[in-house]
Image (tube, rainbow, N blue to C red):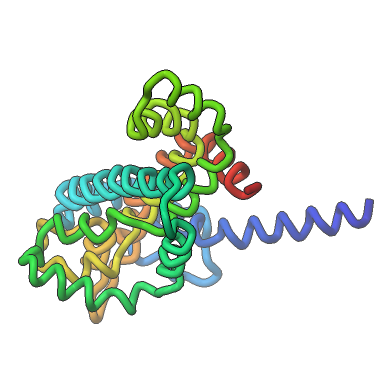
Length: 269
């Protein structure tokens, strides 16, 4: 009994610590400008200033930032799921010379941190004359070794008898991937799509490097407009951050049932 009380106390404390930054952000977004850093801190804003959300939306071209983020995130998510599933199918279900060695080399790229590859990718994008374009945000994110690894683990769990029955019926490799493997892999695909969408939506460094025009910026870069060298409008910044966070929460809530199942199944392999 004592052990359970200690365990639950630690878990509740951890949950409160994890939620505190989010609650502070939500509270600050509804405060008046002069009430942000009062001591002792007040978690419940009095009066509640809903106008911060309207002011934050009108302070910068938020609608354009939103459209850019949605376009980039959807294109990268669809591209990663497509390329990763094709590569994973080849590594999991096809037999060809050097397959396992190529896969190990493919996995080794996961060990290379982004700052190491950033400069070569930037030079490549410059040679293609795509700097300051939406394509520069999409193209580098279309391929991922992590997605290939995760989907390969899931594809290995699908019974080979299904594939053999399809071959007897005359199905091609592409048709097996399209009509058998993909429909049976919804949990893993949803998990990869959720990770990719969240990562692309929150990406700050790469859009900051390649985008110069304000109308082509994404939301994380646009949020920096609220932070100046000498003054930061914290209430508008937090209100804008809450608006930016909502689509990611919706995607997570919508894919949660697939997300948990996909993590469990791929983790068992």
